[in-house]
Length: 86
Image 1: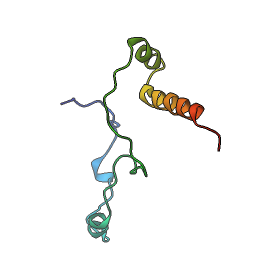
Image 2: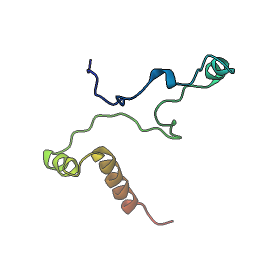
Image 3: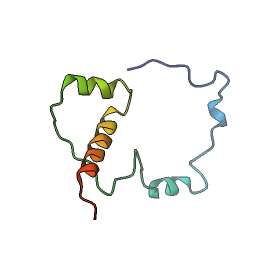
Image 4: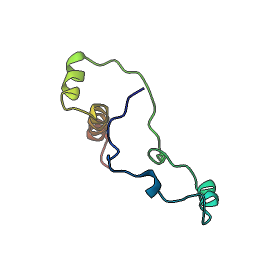
């Protein structure tokens, strides 16, 4: 477990926190849905395993975070370039 990272200001007074045990807050908090992370996608991506050449992986990883998304976009572009015009 990580130790205290010092993110709480030194002059923080815990008594200054609002009292959530009054004014109906317990009921409001109990009724509110817990929403964490991104909202669900209309068409979620599928987890798969694919073998690619090391130079291809190195190229996309060199661009930093989001390299898998960039590979996805490159494959979509390739598919679009092969589709017949309608």
